[in-house]
Image (tube, rainbow, N blue to C red; front, side, top):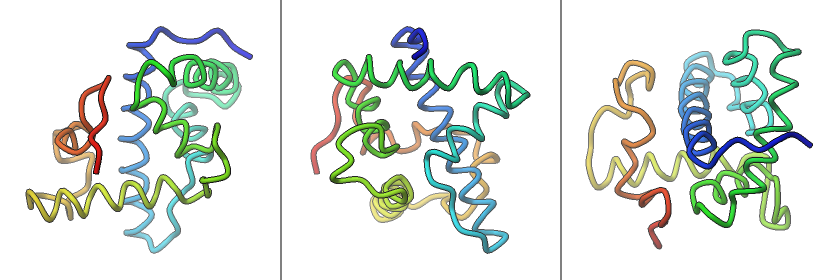
Length: 143
C-alpha cells in the first residue's frame, strides 16, 4: 500500500487517466482493436507518465490508495474506482468504463453535437467536455 496523493492531485490524475483512456480507445477503434479495460489503461498511463515500468510500478499503489482514501470525498473519484473495479465488484465488469465513456459520448452527441469523431488528443479540450453531465468535482449529476 502506498501513500495517497492529496485530493487535488488525485482528481487531476483521474482526469488525465480518463483522457488517456479516450485517446487509446480512439486509436484502438481506428486500428480495429478492442478497447482496453481500466486495469490496462491505468498501467499504460502510469508507464507513459513515469517513462518506465519500474517507475510506474512504484506509483500504482499510490494511485490505488488515493482512490480508496478519497472515494467518499469526491463522487468523480468514487465513480472512477467503481468503473476500475476497485470496489463494489458485484456491479462491475472489465468493460464498465468503456460502456460509461460510450454513454457519455452519446449523451453529449444528442444534447450538444460537436467533434466526437475527431481524435480526442486534437480537440484541445480535456475531459471537461463532458462537464454538463459529470457535475462538479464534489457533486455528480443524477440521470
